[in-house]
Image (cartoon, rainbow, N blue to C red; front, side, top):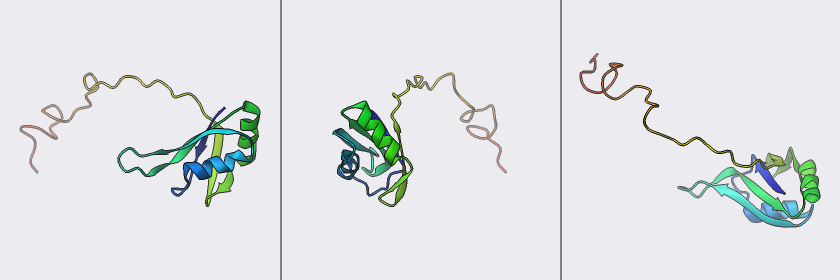
Amino acid sequence: MNIYVSHLSWNTTSESLSDLFTKFGEVTSAKIVTDRETGRSRGFGFVEMANDEEGQAAIDALNETDFDGRTIGVNVARPKEDRPERRSFGNNRGGGFGGNNDGGYNRRRY
């Protein structure tokens, strides 16, 4: 079972998160999600447990409890939703050249 853990302290490590869930059963992985550029925790992570019964017991026991000085949220992780492909054309909201008189050439000078 894959479990989503939110509202984590910036100081929480993958190891301490794993230790928290080990009380309820076998943890196959625990990962804190970090920012790509800074390496700093983004305040959430995922724990994978070996079976659903142990995972549900951990969710029931740990959701909205205090861990590392924060009240954490613990839920079943949902699959990542497919996002529509980002396109730079067809979504132009103005700006740039002409049209709205706020930018580009011949803009108003106040």
